[in-house]
Length: 138
Image (cartoon, rainbow, N blue to C red; front, side):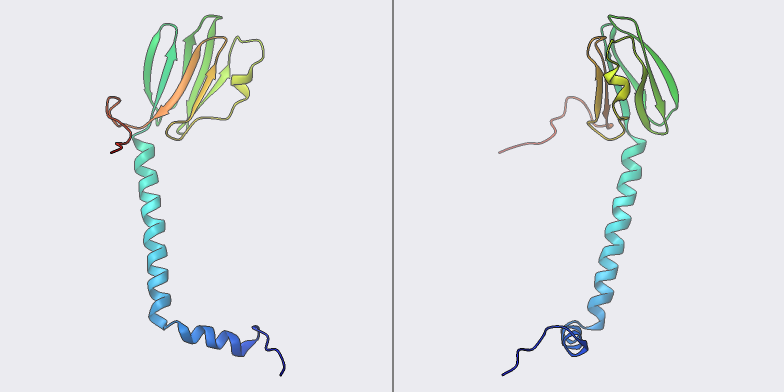
């Protein structure tokens, strides 16, 4: 008895007979709703994000949606942090290796970058209260 291949037009027609036309409509509708909800949640999260800056002089908070340049005093001198297009990054720093300048920009919740020799740390947070726990375990 010859072995039947699972390719060809007749096999595809059998697979398509398993699904009804409304199954494809429901699948398309589900995918559209999922994509739209991810898009809306992403926009809402970006509007509420802020940059938390820790320096030897104290802790400062800046909105991430406002473009600006920050001159932050550290142990070695001034670090220049730029907030631009919802992202923040080190542009200049007095540290010897300039690793902080080479790191990628922070833009999502819990992203961080640091200039350890200068003791300047930038961290992205959302608008949730700081004293609230992130999760509860029972």
